[in-house]
Length: 362
Image (cartoon, rainbow, N blue to C red; front, side):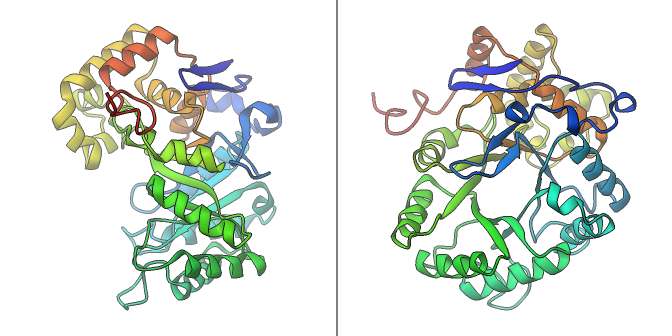
């Protein structure tokens, strides 16, 4: 089975995907590695096309269920585990990393199976140096994350946001130190603009340093700004693209139907609810389209993101194993060209579509 779209083709394995949890067991041995996994940009690291996001761990998902979700995702071939030092703030900042650390400690062999990604840059304390991308904060935050995660190394250390007060020379000096010490394997970014990616890579190149392996950005049918500059810049520099909120916080997961049924959770709050207030008619039409083609809205939204040639992986934020099954099933969905066209009509790209400046030049 292939995910096909206007911007390329990503072959994926459909064998054994989407069956009931009772029938699954350990499915990782059944995964076709050449299809279910892909390289992280220009690096040799191979990651699953779905990443298990952990933002719900602590507050929405209690620790025992979080451990079960991580077990389940890993058993079903998802090897990329994404977190951030900020996550768990509903309890306290750093809590989610601690949850993951206790999971890793319970079975140390898991550490070699998982590609572990976390983030740095957000405010972690009240002091003037408890935030940002200074060398001091980057190194201190890495040490703290390693302690909470109960591990000796982080596979992908991502800058959670830009810091205009800090020059790239300082950032790369700190990151080079962490890499040379074996505490970090690869560096990534998140929420960067296209010109940030270019500036970062040109600075890294001058230092003969690998620089960015990945960029994690907001991208989905309702939010297509990344197409103008972020995706083209990432592709030009060989930077992997990890997509957060591929369903826009549940908006594209059947929000209207769930609200009517009284079953909405994420789609009844936050960015999803705010967007629904502005786009209700469009989302109603989207859900009707999904009904017409006999697909769950969440699977259609996720399949659309994964069909983009520039996208390496989508970060999912499940609360149950059924949510994981649904995301895996999206890998089977092959949208037709007419369905892509109808989705474009509902959720038009920026300007003329595609990369800048052609997107807005008449």
